[in-house]
Figure (cartoon, rainbow, N blue to C red):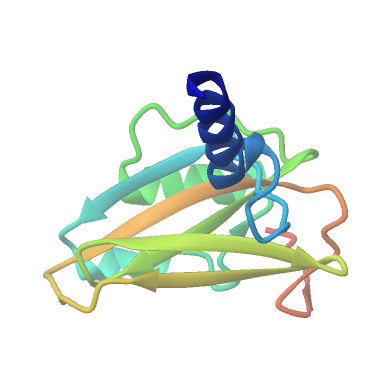
Length: 142
């Protein structure tokens, strides 16, 4: 009886955890980004430094943002294999969810509605493979 209970609990934990590859609803678990940075900036004017497309595709654009926002210990990015998704939010916290469908990268941002001074920012990497457009528009050149 005890052995059966252990096996049932083990099976349940794999179902709930998704075994690390698939969630209970059979949708693939998105891979963890290699780069995941976040911070807060008091000067709201600096929010304009975020890329209009929400994506950084070149070293020059990444260096410009790192300098403008004072990002410490910014990781090196191989833009031949990765893109950076950038999001900002006025509330205390938020999540970025990049999705690629038929080669089109879209990003959903959802967060708290508690407005605070300044802004919060996040930068996450996504594999560049298969991405042809961002919200239906060509990848940025700069």
